[in-house]
Image (cartoon, rainbow, N blue to C red; front, side):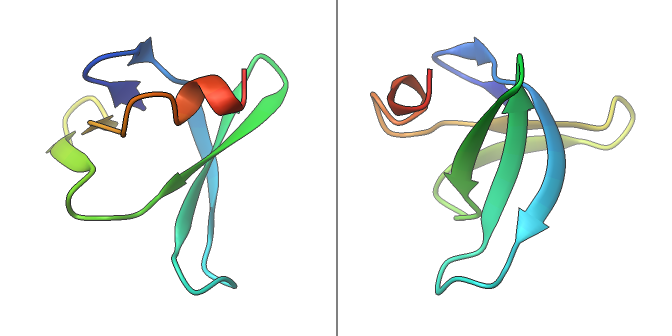
Length: 65
């Protein structure tokens, strides 16, 4: 997964749909980052490289790192 502003976020290890909002569970150097599966955040999906490009709100990724 790549964030337009942050850069490489990590690898999606699963999808958590047990909450009101489904979440991407992303692993980054042994840390878990939760990113809402929201159409507003998903910028592009590259099926060839299996990469999802997102544009998360400022500071969201920093909360986990």
